[in-house]
Image 1 (cartoon, rainbow, N blue to C red):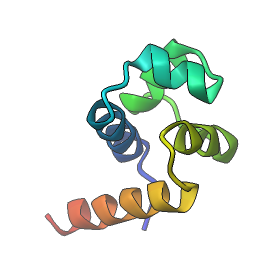
Image 2 (image 1 turned 120 degrees about the vertical axis):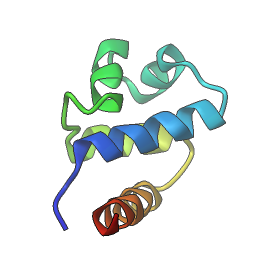
Image 3 (image 1 turned 180 degrees about the vertical axis):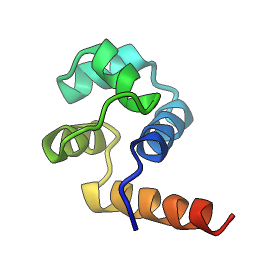
Length: 80
């Protein structure tokens, strides 16, 4: 299974909106710029592990759960 930055960004955006957070709030909690978060969410930028860790922590979830969600969506998309 190949890494898909677009799916990763989509999952992060979905989780953020479900929690009622703006990009400004999530990026502030994660310690990254809002523009960096926006680029991750739209798939234009690949987040490194540290950034994903910070985003997951800001979303109050373990990094492993975020990665599991990305893997599941990646697999489901590949089957289509």
